[in-house]
Length: 426
RNA sequence: GGAGAGAUGGCCGAGCGGUCGAAGGCGCACGCCUGCUAAGCGUGUGUACCCCAAAAGGGUACCGAGGGUUCGAAUCCCUCUCUCUCCGCCA
Image (cartoon, rainbow, N blue to C red; front, side):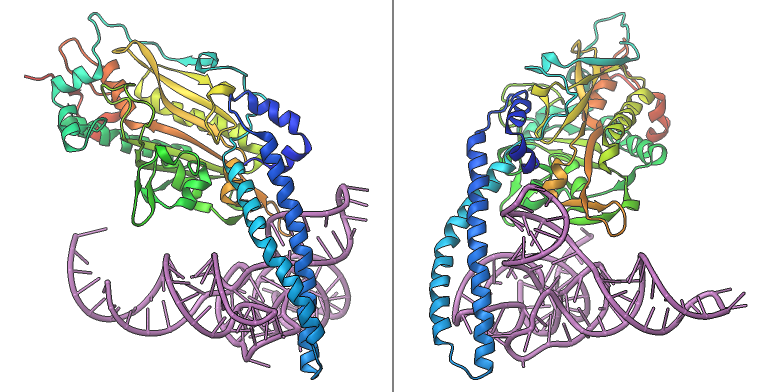
């Protein structure tokens, strides 16, 4: 949630900065809801004060054996007024919080203004695209030829966008997960977490998936739970409704989880291959930090994600998302895009965001800067370190050999029993 | 799934339907005292929101959550959630 005080104090500035996102918000309605809510609340509280006073007097009178008939009569009218206010108050509060929950985060002042992803500036490149003396294939062609990816049977078991990994394909995925976790925990200082893959509504609301994006989620009916679309959700919510000690910060968390997404509204897009699945694996990085350091921490977090690609020897570039391409909760985001020679394009493999106090406010994650001081909202960050399925795709396409085999990157061999090459089909 | 017990402030723990934001203890902060590695004494010590330009100040809410009874509920009633114990089942 944004800070409503900013909206009250500078509605024009707010309007302008949000407009750069391209989101359409009825600001008049939000501000009216805020005003109405406060007015009704003030009125309700004044009545309540009167009622509490009367009630106290009745108590004292009765104890002294006096007659409280007059007071009882007055309290009756006050109670009636209060009752009449209950519904409008509840309604205006609901209206206000609902509209606040649907407002995205304010882009950071430094974020480039743009109209689409085409306006995302490229910040840097690492490595080089590999040269081939043959025409490189798509990963789905390679995967089916080698028998390590079985799309048809994935679809049979569940439906479109579900895939079966087999043999050395499954092993490669597992090796990537272990490799990524080891790198992030041993070298970058993240604590490894294995969180629940199903979470409740409050948790989903805390990070911003609900209420606006319920249609994008898989859910269970009884009980009313959601399959996590990313480990960002459980990791960031670890400290929901807590007041942390300054010494607890910064907290670095890292988790491997499967991720589940409906991909509603992306019909027909990336239908082939592993790029867009309803279920995919990801190693996620989450940081809970003090506000002053969050942008610096974003730079570090992005480097932590890049390190994975560097160790694997995969060529990539880093882009900054312009205002129009920012996610709902993010104030600033870097995307890491890996080169896929089989498709001749860069594809997002990690998205690293500073959500500033947006999620912290929703989830009530605070810390006490110093003893005796009031609790303050933390800043939260998250980034993929990395999307495992897409990394497997990148390895298949970048390290494919002329004979149809795939070379295993040096960094992964110890995780694969020393395997240097996934051999071509006989 | 069945039977039972419980949920109170940072922690422990009390709480006849009214004077309870809540005894007491611990912890913590500040002060005093004291020459001995500490004790003693005193004071203070929650969060959110509203009013106020702000500070000061005032107000409202919160004793797991949500409803209800009552002029008045931490205290009574209902529903739910979570924790613990026993039985069953299971990886």
